Image (cartoon, rainbow, N blue to C red; front, side, top):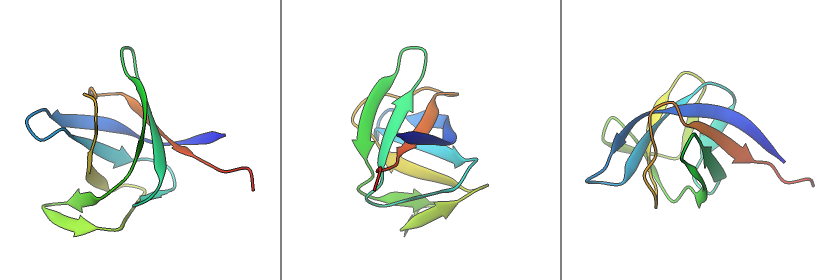
Length: 86
């Protein structure tokens, strides 16, 4: 099961970092995310996040954070958090 937590607003290809605008809930290190868009569809576990060049462990609604990704993401791709059934 997954819930939408935000969308991609920018991608820095030279760093493989996607900027997520959190629109629902929170995202934190260790969360498993699903990136989904017109040509994007992959899962990634958040290893670390940065906000304005400083490491953070969590981001809440209304905040933008940079997350290292293994594949390119595109503006407007949706970001979902995988929720366990337990």
